[in-house]
Each structure stands twice: as structure tokens, then as C-alpha cells.
Amino acid sequence: MKKLKKLLVLACLCCAGYGLGMWVKTDKARDTLFSLLGEDLYLAIQDKVYLLGDLLMWPIDFVRALLP
Image (cartoon, rainbow, N blue to C red; front, side):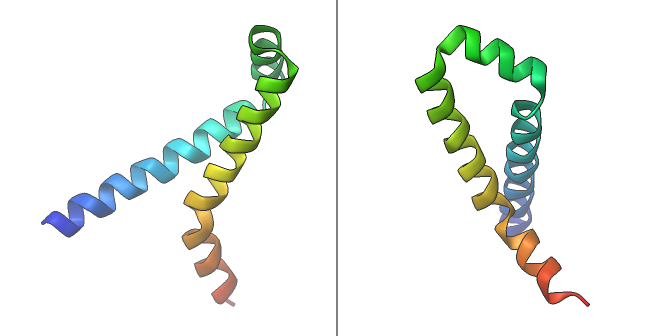
């Protein structure tokens, strides 16, 4: 049961990271964040969000690469 709970939490984190990455890619979100945070902080946060998304999605990408 504990393994299932951990897997569910990991799946939720992956989905949240992917959703956040997709939201940051929209033009409206970019404009809003850019105006609120400024250029340097916005770009630093954007890099970290993309890195987090890549780290969370690597198992799925790995399995996709193995499939024919």
C-alpha cells in the first residue's frame, strides 16, 4: 500500500510539473510573470521550471524511447 501511495504522489508531481511547464509557455502567463518579476528573475524561474519538468518527465521519456 505504501508503494502505491508513493507512486500516486510521484504521478501527481509529474502531472503538476508538466502542467506548470505548459502554463509558463503560454503568452499570457509569460507577459504577466515578466511584468511582475522583471527579466532576470523571470528567466531564472523559467529555467528552473523547465529543468524540473525535464527531471520529472525523464522516466516517461525513457520508456517512450524503448517502445517501437
